[in-house]
Amino acid sequence: MFLDRFFRPRVTQAMGQKLYVGVVAQARTPELYEGYGVPDTVEGRFELYTVHVFLLLDRLRGHGSRASETSQSLFDTYLSALDDALREMGVGDLSVGKKMRKLGEAFYGRVKSYESAFAALPQTDHLQALLSRTVYEQGGAENAAKLGDYVIRQRTALAEQKLDALMDGQVVWSAA
Picture 1 (cartoon, rainbow, N blue to C red):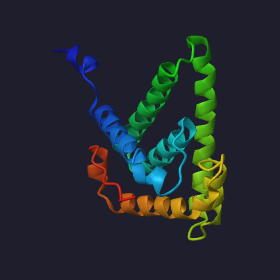
Picture 2 (picture 1 turned 135 degrees about the vertical axis):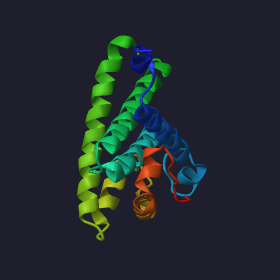
Picture 3 (picture 1 turned 135 degrees about the horizontal axis):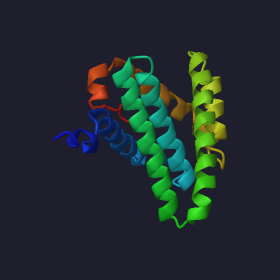
């Protein structure tokens, strides 16, 4: 019985994983690719996963240790999924670490940029510029304003949801 405590997954770990499943489902919404012009590429999916993970991390920030643990679990699950995806794409073991480091740096860069863009709201130019240079790096930047509105709508929807529900892995995303 004593060892059960060490081998049983923590509740916050399970909730972070559940939140990530919701992130993946939302980021794979066909409308984001068809109606918003997000490229259906590895890079495009990375950007959508990243923005949705960031939105949840941003919502949970500053709400105590349980929210912090849930956020950490969400982030850990996200990183693990990136690692798994690289391996599934055939990246060799020796290269995975380097690529993960680059992806981690990209994620933290996005976090700082999204924080800055959100700090400038209601002015949306910063957010649109960020989306243009990340999501639409290969083209389609004419959709940046529309995707920016979507991101703001998701942020607002998350802010209106009960924190306890989010920490229990229950997130309701706004329709694309």
